[in-house]
Length: 267
Image 1 (cartoon, helix red, strand yellow):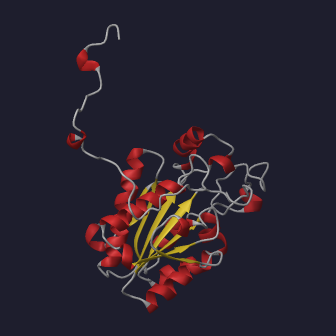
Image 2: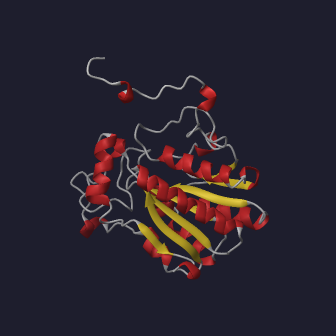
Image 3: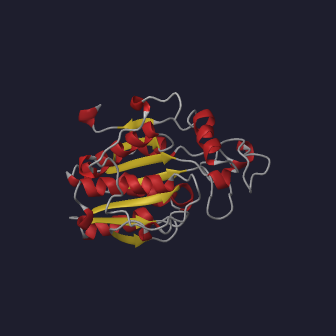
């Protein structure tokens, strides 16, 4: 290659044994094709949860509860014990599992249509009781599975199939800020809002998931709640890149990232 020096070429390693592996699929994440749309944040969140479970060495002690929604088939990807719940009832199911098997690490995985619409009552009362479970809430502001309808978390003015002129807060109400709502409940132990649209936010989200699972392992009591604000390229009618940019430009000014409630000793 003209004008290219040896030092500009990629490092050559004659012995593969000298190479250090820096990335691999966690054993807890089943090696199969995921059904999610290109660019969807669900697959990233799946991976982070499974990485944490493997690193904490709790694969055999963990029970997850899958929702109804885009992630309804989460049990096909997570190599742990899983239970499917009726629409919106994941936290109620998780409550039953944890009370019957308090020795197990229990978490729910839910979208905004599941948790913040049909499951609002179950969510609030589960957290108010301080059930010692982890709730993973993926908020993409739309019903992604059923045709892109307006969700309780859809932003004001946002166009969906059921708000073709944009969400009118006078007739359709305001978006629910679930993390803020439940952070004031006495049973909430740890509440945070994170994202997975960049390397930086992915790292922060994984740390939050690690904290939440560790709190349950330590038997701290109370519910750990992680809201992950994600994109929906298909429902938003955007490319993956455009949808990630939209998060930065519009969404995070409404759903601000960061911790909303920390254990007293960490405040």
